[in-house]
Amino acid sequence: MMGSVIVSHLGKAYKQYYTRWSRLQEWVMPFRGPRHTLKWVLRDISFQLSRGEAVGIIGINGAGKSTLLKLITGTTQPSTGAVTMHGRVAALLELGMGFHPEFTGRQNAYMAGQLIGLSVEEIDTLMPGIEEFAGIGDYIDQPVRVYSSGMQVRLAFSVATARRPDILIIDEALSVGDTYFQHRSFERIRQFRELGTTLLIVSHDRVAMQAICDRALLLDGGSLVKQGAPDEVMDYYNALIAERENSTVSQSVNDAGRVQTTSGTGEASVTAITLENTAGAPLEMVNVGEAVMLRIVVRVNTAVPRLVLGYMIKDRLGQPIFGTNTYHLDQVLHDVQAGEKLEFRFRFPLNLGDGSYSITTALTSTETHLADNYEWRDLAYLFIVNNMNRKPFVGNTWLEPHIEIAR
Figure 1 (cartoon, rainbow, N blue to C red):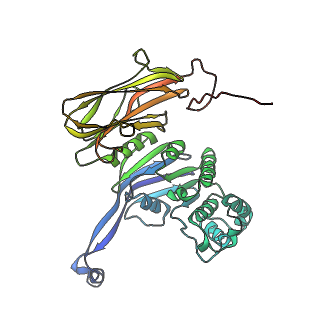
Figure 2: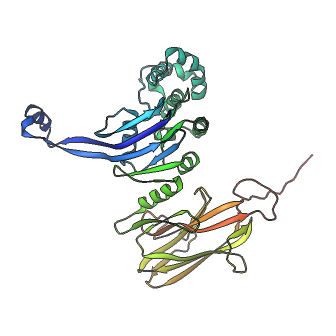
Figure 3: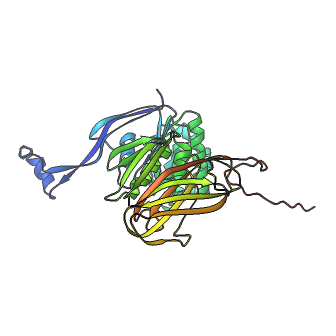
């Protein structure tokens, strides 16, 4: 089917020779056996993309993301496995890949266009649109060596997407572009998706990942360790970053059917969390702007010299709405003993729009969970906001205006 991608048991290994002479010795004396070891950067990667599906790839630097895209596009040959693709492919990988620095932007556009299967006549027809979308003005006829990295991305993306491909593959190059061009490029990607283009994108941008992708793949150490809904995989990825020698990362399905991620070393843990009204009654449904108290109960399992509690409110897509912690609020606790039970109360007006929200909690020693991650708990509490008596508005924040009109 046009626009489909099948990756089957894909692996990539590079030879590492013991000395600079080992390669020559292996070549002239093959009967003596190999003089190298194999370094695997990818092992046994398998997944499929259906027509029109958008899949994001995440992972720390060195996880094998860029190598995987090169194997899929054919710029690098696999050591094991195979890739099967049906349809016309456009790929935007390493910054400026394929551009000759001494040739002009226009000349490079013609060369890059032909590499993705366009004829010179087709590029002639598409060139005005390429120039307009790239928005680099007279630089189109200047050598690429004088371009900024953002200008190179603009031109490369404009050429790659001048005609809608069946499959669009993008590495993190788009993150180099300016905010306005990122907005335009993602809008074009959305339009292509609506028309049936299959998308494979590498990004650390949670907003983009969740807004565009149907599914996410997490690479770690050259292996595919998790795939699933973008918010579920991103939560697991963030927990994995904070993981330390004695910490654990686990996921479970809560009562609402959503996947909850928990990680940490366990010195302290949240045992109860409720959102209450001013009378102290628990709330699951809250009116826009209602005064509430967030009550979080913490049990200290092991004595810690310093304890910080943080919370974050997220929307239904997992995007952060607001977050703070007791470090920023100048309420850090010192020399907390094992067995202590602590109750934190945060009071605020819930100025959120209609929708479902979740609360994430974090117990650490500093302002970030990357130092000492005692516990990180996503989807620790779920609640719904309804507009019961406010004037209609859109968005997820209630900013009631007082209007004056002068004539």
